[in-house]
Amino acid sequence: MAARLDPVDLTRALVRCPSVTPSDAGALAVLEGALVPLGFTCHRLKFSQAGTPDVDNLYARLGTGRPHFCFAGHTDVVPPGDVGAWSAGPFAGEVIDGRLIGRGTVDMKGAIGAFVAAAAAFLEGRRDGFKGSISLLITGDEEGPAINGTVKVLEWMKAKGEIPDHCLVGEPTNREALGETVKIGRRGSLNALLTVYGTQGHTAYPQHADNPIRRLMRMLTAIADRPLDEGTAHFEPSRAEVTSIDVGNPTTNLIPGKVTARFNVRFNDRHSGESLKAWIGQRCAEVGGRFDLACEVSGESFLCPPGPWTDRLATAIRGATGRTPALDTGGGTSDARFIRNLCPVAEFGLSSATGHKVDEAVTVADLVSLTEVYRRLLAGYFADPPCPA
Ligand SMILES: [Zn+2]
Image (cartoon, rainbow, N blue to C red; front, side, top):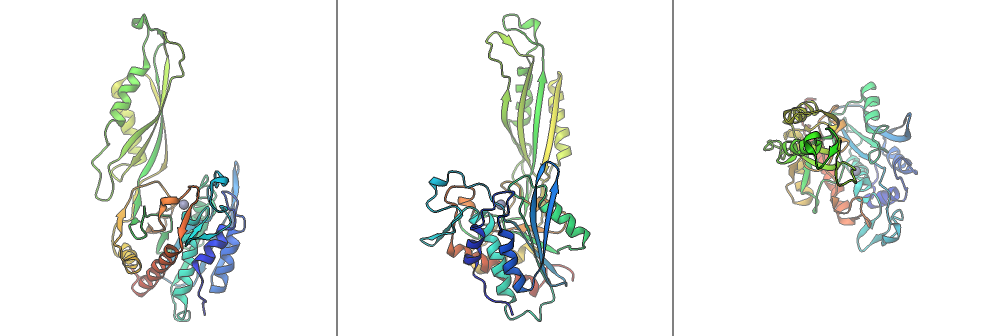
């Protein structure tokens, strides 16, 4: 028989482990300590790769049957920054005026505390009759290089045949109030480094030189002056933002021979990293002259189309918070970009307002509500699974 677990106690215990990436600082042991008595089988997965720090991860599963529902998240946190500016110790786990203050409370130890408390509440009284599976995929490498974390846990899961039917990532998805927003996909992200070459010369004799800056400006105008498209059904328009233009020329009468620019493109499902690279190269070629273009795609765009699975989630949110969530794809990337290769994935967590800031905090009320969202989600999901059995 599962016991009631308090999401606030669990989150405090996690916050008290200063698990700044790549350090675990005991956070996964806290989770194991809560999951094993509930009946979960825990696998600690430590991965390493030359040139990156070793990272501890945890995969825990209760049950062997289907449907198989997976909660995913990360216990690593960003550094506290200016510790003196915090109104309580960033790793003290203090509750002041109904708010639990600490690094990682919002992003995202609070959601992990809620995962476990919700699973315990869901299992209470129904252990023997439960035929499905609940799992947790918890990484210690989300805020860092993301090399020895979710990607490698997913490879391990695939090799072991541990394929969930659906996955919920507990990243903070709401801007202000709990229940505002579910993420059903994310835009892709591409970083470009563009180098344009000309011929160095005297500004008084430009006819003997070839100024590459003029061409670069025309290229950047073609690429970044307006959105790349009008947006799609679930995505805002794709857009390039120039982040740096560098000549490094201190001389007033010298035309430089070379200029570089960097820009980032956040793109929707009208594009892929490859199609975008080709499009950018074409815009540059139209301007002409010699240039080098280097692109790196840190994630493709993806979408989990609204349907029975997202309906179960929206119903749980409405039941627990009274709000009907918007299904959104804005904001930055998350580990959902890897998980979507294994199974349909959506994201719902706390409010992101204080994430990564000094005095990151979650209200006790929100932690209790989020636990109720997840509990209702499990109840609705297993009562009427949104997938073929
Ligand atoms: Zn996060």
